[in-house]
Image (cartoon, rainbow, N blue to C red):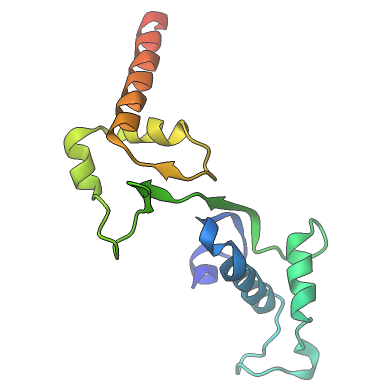
Length: 148
């Protein structure tokens, strides 16, 4: 499906830290095998289309410039969004919708909140943190207004 939508390669592929292994390793292997022509049109393997061993595919995917095909050039694994110390999750019912969020805060405030944290670290979602992001954003707006 991803090949159909995005073509033969992705520049950036993201996912949560919990997906790094084995999910992304499996995804790399499947995409490398698919794009390297490891199966014939009928879905079976022809003599000329024998796939390389899985450890070779994974090694090539992890090593720059060793394969003519790379599914993802950059893999970014993001930290989890936590609410009250727990990973935000529909199953835990500890989430808010964007619509609910926008009742109290602006989209730019959420963007600033995210920019104030490293993408790979967990993010504890708190009202105090959002108020701090609002304050930082307002300082940038004040600076912009003074300069322009």
